[in-house]
Image 1: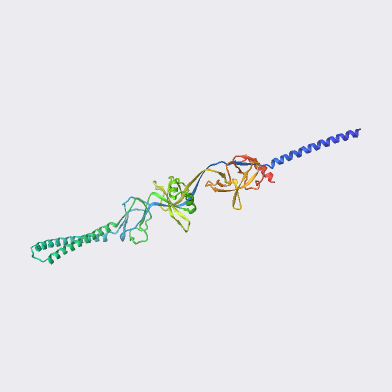
Image 2: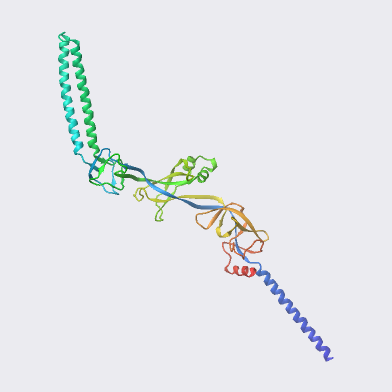
Length: 395
C-alpha cells in the first residue's frame, strides 16, 4: 500500500516537471521568433522639393581688358601710374621722348609757312597775268601757266598742312593715355625702355573692373539639358536661368549675384564643351581680371522623390534600395538616382513611387538582406536597441 502511494506521487512529480519544461521551451521559442524580426527604420516616400547646386571652374576677366600699346616709337621718359592703380579715361599713363617729334612739328610748321608764302606769291602773279591777258598783252599760254603755278602752290600748301597735322598727332601720341576707366595691370617697361608699336609685349593693360565676366565651360550634354532636348532655345533657357553665385579662390562666396549672359555657339571639338559667360557687378573692386573662382548654378526641383544616400547600396554598378512590402518583407529594388550637392541625398529618377516604404538603416550590411521580415519603425532612424535583434538574428 505504501509502495503504491509512492509510485503515484512520483508520477505526479514527473508530469509536473514535464509541464514546466514544455512551458520553458515554448517561451524560448517565442523569444527566438521575436529576435528574428528586427526593428529597422523606414520612411514612406512622398513628393518633395530638392535644392542643390552645381559648380564649374571659372576664369575671371574684366569687362574690357585693353592692351596699351604706343603708336610711335621712342624711349619712355616717364611712367605716370603704378600697377593696380585706378585710372580714368584720358589719364596719362606713359610719356615717350618728345624731342624728335617736337622737331618734326617745327619742321612741318616751317613747311606750311613756306607753302603759304608760295601760294601768296603765285596768287599775285596769277592776278597780274589775268589783267594782262584781258588786255591782250600776254598770250593764253602765259596766263594758263600762271594759273597752273597757283594751283601747284596751293597743293603744296595742302600737303604741308597735312604733314603738320601728322607731326602734331605723332607728338600727341608721345603721351599714352588710358582709353577707359579701369585698373592698371603689370608694367614690364619702365623709364629708358624703348617702346614700339611692333613690340610683342604691351606697355600695360587697363581692365575695366566695374563689371567682370566669369568664363566657364558647359559640356554638350549640359547644353542639351539646358535646352530640354530641343523643347526650348538656348537663348530662352539662358533668359530663364536663375541668378548664379561666385565662389572665390579662398572658398568664400562673393556677396553679389551674377547672371549668365551668353553661351558660345561653337563647341570645342577638343573638349566637347562650349564657353559660357556670366556677368557680375564689381562695385567694390574685389574681383580682379585674371583671378579664378567657381561659378555656382542652383538646381531646384519640385515634386520629386528625395531619399537618403545611406538608404541605397551598389551591386555590379547598379544602385538598389530595400522596399518594405505589405508583409513587411524586404524587396531589393533597382533605382536610378541623381546625386544632390549636399552629399547626403539622392533625387530618384526611376524605380520608386510615392507611398512606398524603404529601409534607411543598416542598408549595405550583412544584417539586412532581401526577403527578411522586419518590424518597420517609421522615422529617420530606429531606436538604438533595434540593431541588437538584427545582429542576433544574423548569428
